[in-house]
Figure 1 (cartoon, rainbow, N blue to C red):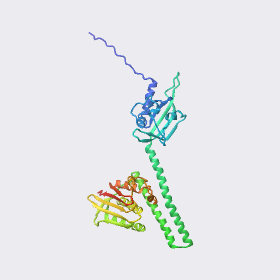
Figure 2: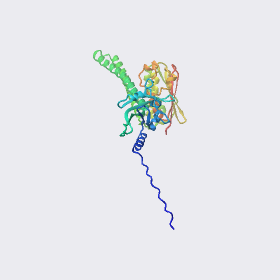
Figure 3: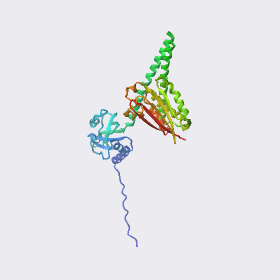
Figure 4: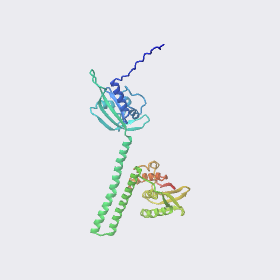
Length: 376
């Protein structure tokens, strides 16, 4: 009549020991950290780590129980191995370092931030004191180091390049003042003032390059498209640089047809690019000529600046558009320069979707060619 009563199954509640719960919380915490974390015991064996540590150390296997020196092999700036276990054992208070490198199996290296702090691992019980050990934090700071080195190089280069023209300008102005009060020799005064003026123009160009570079690096440069009369642009550039070429007894030529028409692009940036090419051509040419060329292509204008100067070696051609690059050729070192002009030029070319080509032969001159497309 009545069915058989079934006894309800008892509900089992899983009780997680407090120590295990805390361990899981700790594991979750360190796995959420962006820095690599390694916990090692007093014997130098890894007892805890996170995924970021595997990334920094370039490992894909478990590190549990392994000696620290087996999984972590940093070197110093002289490429000498660092005894990391001794470094850890001798740590009494928290220390940090930004001077170590970490080599990888493929031959590459990263700059490493390392922090070591002595800690108690686990929780003390009534019967047994907690185990002692160390926590290591690891971070790849290669990009930061690169930016620091670039900043230091920038300060060094710019301060040096600023010092020279300022000293020359100040000396010549002082000389002009002295001559005006003592001899009144107009010819000597004019020569002194001209040299000062040349140095001030160089400073103005440098400041313009630095300002453009700053805007380019921050992504603040924008392209305002203008209707450029190509023939007038070429004639204007030739007029502006005829005197500079004549001062070095160089011939400034123009190789362009009379009906090049209109180019739709940024006149400011196109002019600055060509000015950089022409300035360099005159600067590094001791005899012969500089030729400004232009010809129409179906989708834009091909500009060129050719010189009969000292030329650029094959090795330097690969680096000539790098920031701060200056050739070790003594003839290049004789002239002022920050190594920023062509770097800025390449930045501007990218904005204009332009392509630059360089052909050069040492002691036989160089030709910079740039195709600038119509942007309208």
